[in-house]
Length: 409
Ligand SMILES: CC(C)(COP(=O)(O)OP(=O)(O)OC[C@H]1O[C@@H](n2cnc3c(N)ncnc32)[C@H](O)[C@@H]1OP(=O)(O)O)[C@@H](O)C(=O)NCCC(=O)NCCS
Image (cartoon, rainbow, N blue to C red; front, side):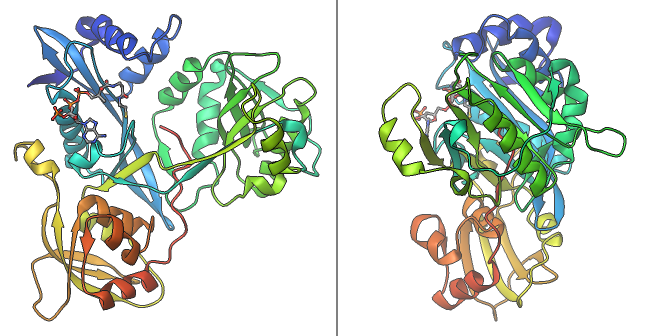
């Protein structure tokens, strides 16, 4: 495979063609794509002298309990119609992750199109997120919203700052380049935002960004909804409710730590009476994000757990090495480690004959470390195994909050 960095002068039209062919680019969205590619690490693979595969990544952070770790965010992976099944996409993604890891990303994350594909380069599936679609008049929120301010794509810098300052919990991902927020705002059909600037200098503290194909009656698709305090969250919900005289349906990702169904009047009744209608109430759960550790000692140096200490040998398998053809400064993190998990954690290369052995793929170990599922559960469904006592000790130690990326990409 021949690959190189994206060159706007040479590749812009070819990249537009790739995105049109995969159905991601409609007339009017070109500027958004150009902005997104311009602020990314963008790699292309050539076929007959033209770019036919594009992979983009961005720098970000992922929160592990109270720590923010450098994150490589895989934003897009696309192959044109004529270049499919050449292994361009998987190799280019591996190369992009390797380049980010070589520059210090401790973890990589992505939104998958299907389970299994990115497992080939070590990604493991994160937990379920909930998308809830409801009639805004059914919200029971007691607060009355104040008059908000309008937000438009010109407000991208302020909107991005508001996203960076949002309340974040365990697993929260943040994409750092402001231009990415600008691109995301432009990309949305009939996009608009509403929010409040309650910061000391009028900074935007809480807002949502939304799009729709039917401005009159919805559904309105909330792209993101950010806030710093519970009161701000309730005010945004009250604001959404205030649209309900005209808008029949709104769809929102359930924020971390909130059970949105609590704020809905008779959720089961409305789900049944609207079933299969144009304005169907829904609650959908899907696990569509994946992540992988890129630097095990680096991640564990930032891991501080309460409730004891567990030490074990770890034999970590990482399938990304062969995809990279074991070239380049970073080739994955396969190998034998002695791992300590506790208030002060760590991983050192080697083996201690006195300790029990855990065997895992890097994807399964990432899920264990993040707290997606307990060790005993992963031992049933994923590539992780060890003595029962060790698995149970890990279950007791790794009682973490559900890791919630809280930023869709
Ligand atoms: C996804 C996409 C990038 C793959 O492009 P590609 O260059 O053909 O992919 P590759 O050649 O690297 O990989 C294809 C291989 O992966 C395998 N594969 C595909 N989906 C898989 C899955 N869910 N689990 C395991 N393997 C999978 C295929 O069977 C194929 O293997 P084969 O050649 O042995 O048959 C391409 O289909 C595309 O652009 N789709 C539209 C945009 C999109 O959804 N992008 C992904 C965003 S997350």
